[in-house]
Length: 287
Image (cartoon, rainbow, N blue to C red; front, side, top):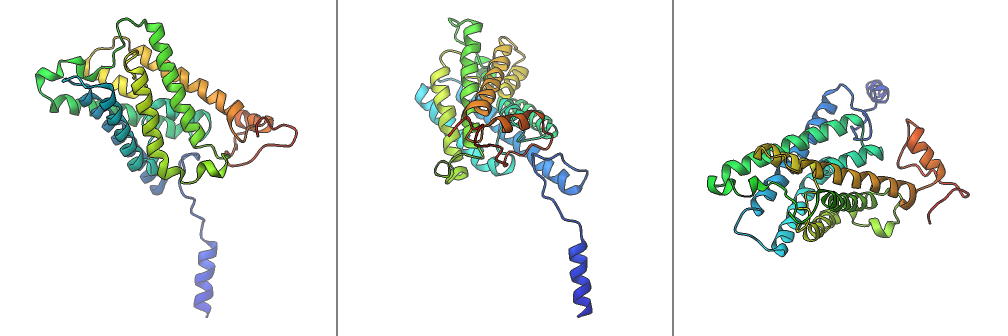
């Protein structure tokens, strides 16, 4: 009996183990290190796969827009299904930055993800370059994203801005903590389908105009491997600006939990919690 009591006291007095989370700064521990390693590998492989496939389907013989959209749909669905439960399958710096601004992830996780995405994109492009025949690897600059020659750089930025805006807005809406239950039922099992549809739709619309880069990591990875940085700034600035606009619009106007108190806490409170309802009767902006 005494032994049981001692054992019980040891259990009760032992420190509580807090599971690592992307919205909390990691601690110097084995558990947190392993968690960060899983996140890093998840984003690296996910982005690398995306870049690898993007290069392969852009090679001749020329495919039609419908087949391109189908490939994009299944690629994103596969990536989100596999890596979504691990890192969220962000695989795009504009998504990672949006999550940081909305305080879903910390600065440490943001830096880790972006580094993993950039390395993954370069490795994916290198793998594709070394697997395809040399005569094909010289065509289309190893899957380099290129705008339509009839489209100006300014217009291309506009198209990419729209694409980045649409992607981030869809993700913020899908992950809104206060969305009505009818819209969140089966959320994470349907997320691969949702992301596949969004990206396939945007590729089908934008590819003929701006090239549908939509992802700074993917565009930078192929540019590094091809050693051609022509118009690269278009695919860095456009999607990022679209992401920032989507964040402001959703957090200030469209979110189901939006209020003056929540906005103030988001901008000033170091302990801001996205799962806390900050709304009050007199300050609710949305239904």
